[in-house]
Amino acid sequence: MMENRAIYEPEHEELRRAVRKFFQAELMPNIAKWEEDGIIPKELWRKAGEMGILCPTVSEEYGGAGGGFLHLSIIDEELGYTGQSSFTIQTHTDIVASYIEALGTDEQKKRWLPRMVTGEMIGAIAMTEPHAGSDLKNINTTAKRDGDEFVIKGQKTYITNGINADLVIVVCKTAPELGRNGVSLIVVDGTRPGFDRGKRLKKIGMKASDTAELFFDDVRVPVSNLLGTENGGFKQVMHEIPKERLSIATIAMSSAQKAFDTTVEFVKDRVVFGKPLIEFQNTQFKLAELKAQLTVGWAHLDHCIARHIKGELTSDEAAIAKLFNTELQCRVVDECLQLHGGWGYMAETPIARMYTDARVRRIAGGSSEIMKMLIARTL
Image 1 (cartoon, rainbow, N blue to C red):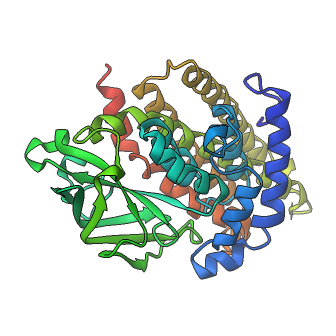
Image 2: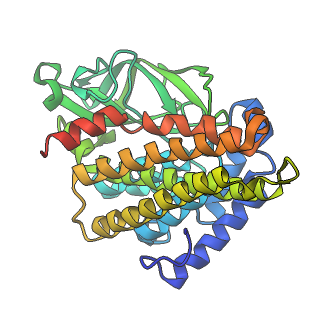
């Protein structure tokens, strides 16, 4: 269902084959070790940069390939189809680089984007705090103006790429008295004095993805590191986040497809009571239900991608895609693990990794409950 879809041209399918080959050669043979280590080595990031897998939409002027959103979607789909999500290039490419592309000055783009394209510089975005998640007006991290510098003080948590990051977009309060209208986005270099990384946080899934707490103890950065307009951060995030949620929906969809395809192969080989598991009506009906849901999911995803390319995708439409596809992923993986029986509960099996990795999709980028709130506002 992933290939030969109407929204893609032959050049996109050629990219798909190259990206799939790269992941199979460079990522999958090593992922078990990297999960034990709790981090993806920076060498893989640089190899991905050499392959053109990072930041494909960045213009040639800033070192990129000048591709479109469909190139980005292909890479997201293929990452999801590996059956693991620990190589968090989506945060780096779909979010951090996207923010810089959309909001950065020419000088900022020249300073950061070329090295993000090559993988020499890894990006992260720091929004969540111990007591503030999706509700940005309640964040406590502040950035006070002192001459030609901002002085940042606060704490962030659950930050993807937190250990590896060389560049962090920090969501700060520059005018706390204004609530959400006093939020700004400020880029912090990972070597700045006062910037510290906490211990790597252990998770139930995506174990090779480095997730960390970040601490800002009077970190001084030049005013030129302000991304977009001062106190305009909330609107800037709201403008960019539908695309982020569409990307999450995309990787959730391809991950669900991988779980399904893996399970179809398994039940054809697994013999129970003298015959392959696929020959039992229960197995056939379960898989038929999942195939029907996947088919509908792909059709809706393609519709949303086409809407986004035309500049017509609304916030609630992106929320619907994110809600439906991440919930679908969790349902599909759960049913598929059940069909694997006891084998599916073993940590070393692909379906077990897919099961634990899937759960975060209903939380990251705005929980399913937040998506329902956004959709409900349009009623």
